[in-house]
Length: 358
Image 1: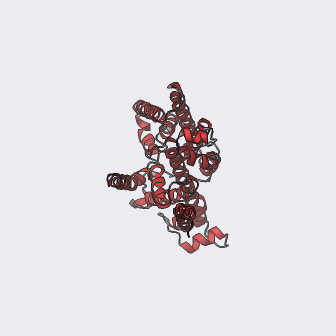
Image 2: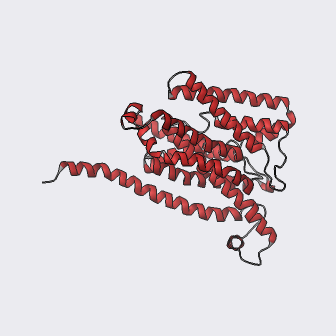
């Protein structure tokens, strides 16, 4: 006679094993596609570089033209790496926000991180902090100002959330909306003060990797590594927090501490991305939903696969942004992600509405 308990355990574990297998397959596929995408991204642009030359440059072969070497190593590869890392970080931050706030619409915009970065950058452009910090590096004070703006906005949102009493997700989201609205008005005020800087501020706010290099990767990497490490280390707590505060406390989780660490970690990483790229929407919002549909909601695989898919998505968005217009002109990458992400998110919402009404 079969053991009902054994059957029940097997029935429950089968979907989990299936989701893990799908996560592994999707993760490996995204990783392989990312490697191929780096190679492809280095060939594309106004200055044609054949794939064989890219391979020679990356493998250190002798006899490669110096111009091609500079284009591949110092311009296109650094830009592709930065775009991939920023996409990975934004997707991880979005998944963390959605888990902590239990809000499917949460992303780096929710707590004012993106708006804070935009305000910091607008101030930097207005007062002229656009000169190179290090000779020949191309790195200016602008990303540092954006990073400071993002972190200050986060602190204000958390303080407003605390002023309202014990933690409530709804209060924190409302505080984020208030701060975002206020900062948007401040940005408009700065633009009205300095009409000559309006185009620079608007272009930065729309997101771009134009002119970014290895110096920006080095600026971005430590902050992003710290923030994402915190989120990954607390991925188990993210799963437990999804059960509700009472049950999480009964299971031994320090709910307030875990929640604050997760919010700081996700915001720290997202702020670093905003600092080097400007505001890029929909990556943090759409990618976790897409991955969750494929592999389920367990946060450790969700975070890992979202990072790979988010990196891949933003890498190709940036490639499209710099090759779709003729004559070497570029689109802001935020425009590309919005053109793809907006309709895709509408499809996700429609699928969810049909499922709930079925």
